[in-house]
Length: 203
Image (cartoon, rainbow, N blue to C red; front, side, top):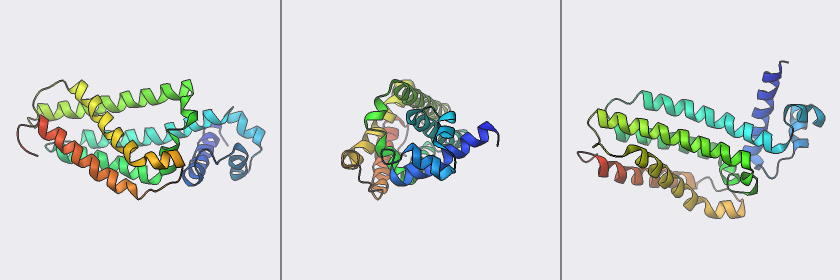
């Protein structure tokens, strides 16, 4: 089996275990057993668990970004619909990988390489929101403003709503994915307040 194909299969197997049991409760031994390979073979592809975690996060994030870009590219004349579609998309992944979102806030995230990874993802996501908001300005849906600042502020508000609703789960590491629907609704309401503040008309 080619190296890249084997690595992808390991990442997918790890993702399934992380999504079900969480990161902290998953060992490299268990991943090797799932793949029916030796632990030494697993370490050949991923020198430590932190590297494997980052690869799993990248796998999910690139998938989300590709779908986000499709929504942004398909925007025509309803910024509200586009933003709500992005919120629903994030909610879909939040439900599916709830255990990983909880784990995003524990000690392993303090690793320098992981922090840089998250910072890069946040920057790219903010840039995509700036692009969408600027498209809405060009279409006449939103008033011209400092969209770079607003794009970053928008994401901070959306992330804050997630953390606020998940804080008990983060501390206890006891998942309650039923909160996701509440998070989605709160994000939509907050997004509407922001958009109406930037809009030439009520959305």
